Image (cartoon, rainbow, N blue to C red; front, side, top):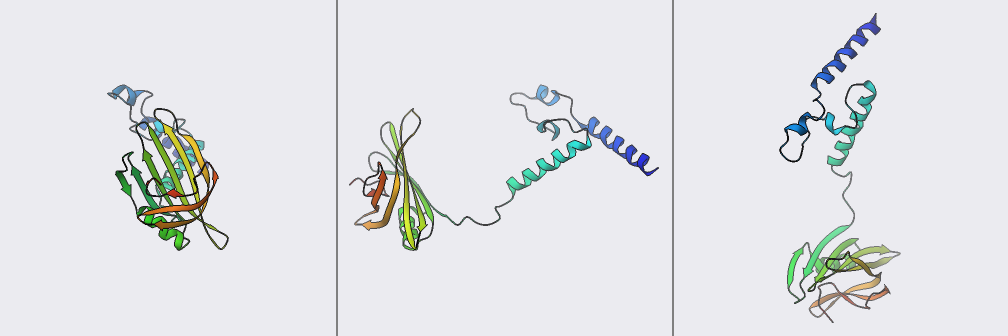
Length: 192
């Protein structure tokens, strides 16, 4: 007898879900430009009609919570932000602590990243710096790319530098080695 009551509840639940589900194409027909789903069911791969589909709904809900939840622990790599310099040497944008932040991170051997973008008339040279722990000390990983507008960026130099140092009014990565890298690379966009 209990199984009949359970079957009746399941039938009512399925019937209620079918009645609440919008008709196929109903939401899109009412949209002016880009259709926006008004209910959860259009976002799912199949209509909500069966108990087997409940696991898909639960998985979708868990995935949404996982995306919206804060990370379990803070990142251990510090972001020192970025610097954008025009071809004239004028700083056009900056964020974070910049080159001074990366220098301090290197001195304390704290993992950190920093990005430098240099703009020319039709070129964009980007350099990504990362302070990494290496054995008992630190090293600086460097990756460069060059973009000639409107083409896609091409990989440039990659390698490592052994130090970051202040040089008069500039901060530079020094003793750099790798494919296509200069021995000294300015972190502020100054030309040697």
